[in-house]
Length: 374
Image 1: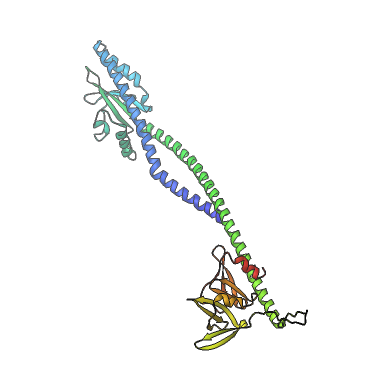
Image 2: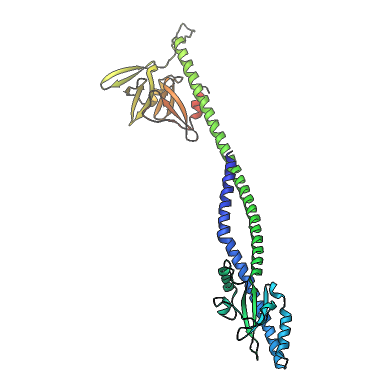
């Protein structure tokens, strides 16, 4: 379920970011750049066309060809071309239209507004024309715009190249739809690629987590077994103490009898200047601090001993006491819990709670487990 949420959140986030970036930045810049390039190419072609027509008309006038004949020829050439992206017209210095694709406009005044780009200069650039089209796009003031002017030598006629704005809008809209489709396909490809990457990474980290979980479960299982073994061992020791009498080993052979050495049943300690013998079964743990040996009973009271920790340990029953480390000896009766400490070590919690941390290093863990018959 969590994986599906990751994919869902990733998809939603990608779509939001992708749509915002594309719609606010990439798409407008792409349309603007493509439109400017197309308009600039159109201006260049229109400029070349009116230049050629102007040169041919001027040459014809020099060769004594009547003006009316030239005008009629141009009119036939441009008739019906106002549906194209660029078309030509001719007007005289007074502004009266002499040639135009729409014959209804002949002999009428050229009503080009004074705020259009064609009145600012004889030839405009693609960027200027694009900005002008954007400014008049909503108002729809002009259906066409003059983008280049050139006079015909030795006459009062001026050639004008018109841009069909409606036609350009249709081409721009068509290109815009193509760009949107391209961005949609590109976005789907990127989204699929992103989801595949997330899937690969998720699988990789899931495997890592599974390995760590398995390792952790093994550690918990081992600790559980260790604590169960401790509990069973404590029970067996208690039963052994109840049912066992002092063990004596006798030897026969020349009528001699030898008593076997048994562990101490009491430990001699001091509290202030008073001697205090403590039963072995009352000891919780023994530890060394500042070269002084301390014996802690089950009731939490602490006593001192003159012997070193090594001397004390040799006199204790190894079934009941374990040398956890160089500073501590623990009694089987007082171990409350065994927990994992670090990667390989164990920590023993005592009853009563010990004043120091009792840690079994990784080098003694195996011996400790064997001591508990694990």
